[in-house]
Image: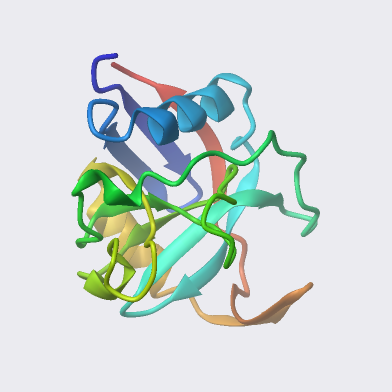
Length: 166
């Protein structure tokens, strides 16, 4: 699979992403299937932590979790690092629990890399245009909202659409 590119159109602007299908084929294929299904359209960035990351892809604007497919295998040992601008699969404490949610690192987060503290978080892409939009998202005022603690944007940051562009 060639490295596909997608555009994430958000309420704050566009983010173009290149997926590393060559180094993270399971994660890239999983993400592209959610894109093809229209899963991300209308979801929000529900977890925003300055100097860390922005996370989305699982909840709609009413804070309802969207249905997901089975979890995928964690590819964190692919050698890719959680650097500023990279996308990684979100997961629970269970290593192979990632489904649709992902996060964008807003700084280098080496402690999330494979073997640093645990198995790690699989990097599967990088922002190639629109990091200024990610920076706008991370500076959105947050607080408690719905089932989320203090890290949820008080004004929804919506993924209006996510589409393959290359």
